[in-house]
Length: 493
Image 1 (cartoon, rainbow, N blue to C red):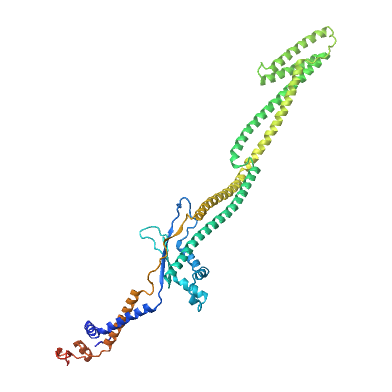
Image 2: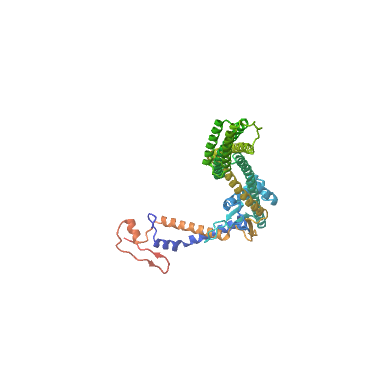
């Protein structure tokens, strides 16, 4: 007797000993049903191929690949494109698939049927390696004819290979074209910055930052030249003034000699010449030519003064014609030379002052020019770096594009050609038989449990105590009747 769903081991042995044939029957029936299903269900064959991802022949250190995205994403994108209606419909028309289904199904259902038959499964990376890149993937196709399954799998595999090569080549070409356009724009900007920088250098020639020290050195030298020129001009003006005083004195002496010198005039001239001599001695040595000449003139004037005194006693002789002495002519020539030197020195001084003024303006403008020059140089350097970087990228992209054209980059390679299935993949006979037998066994166990649950008879002391809620006083053992072969159960009280 089973109460509250509790079944002990004795009940199980008792039920199995009595109803074992139910399990055998249900298991056999389940296996027979599975065999019938295997015979009745339409068979499907699976053709399978393995595609490996072949790495580029040129190392990435030499030519950086343009397409470096995750292969899983690219594979998913290619799968969506290849399994689209646009790509699968030509395959259906080429092999004449689903002729009977076309009569009752529309084109979308037919394409969906073929799409469901194609399965793409990526390969797992090798364990124990740091490389997490996808090593390859499998393409499998289910169809009701083995030869047709192989042909369709071959076509789908070829579509994957073609799509991968096409996408890589197109992406490499688009990348190279885009970088070329950006490079042309960067070159125009670089040329514009170069023109601005050249124009700025022409406009502020001499005031650029690198010329500041040169300007300061030149300015120091020109200040020294201006000071030397000023001193030379001062000396030339002093020489001219001195020579003019000497000339005027000699001309005065010459006139006085021609008309008869007045003793008082001669004395005053002599005094003036002696003062000039004292002035020359303050500037020059006693051996200076001007000092020597002035002394000679003083000596000559003193002689004339003595002769004039004698002539007065003899009633002075008639005056001789005026003759310009050589000393006077030399003085006049020196005065003209002094005037020429003064004019040259004055002109040179004006030039030096103008140049110094220009240099001072350049030096004063250097901070402002330096700020603008730094800004222009910074813009030019930025444009130049960007242009050089794009130029390197364009060169690398061009080499990567050549690798794609030559199919030397990452490629899909068929490692195992699509197989020709020798036996159907569906229905799977061992799986169906195991499932049918297991299902029948489960049904038989369920039936046995229901039988045990519905059995209300008492078989053990525990059943009696549990049902009657009375203690068992004595038990009559089971007697086996030889003649009948049946078990007689003792009554409990």
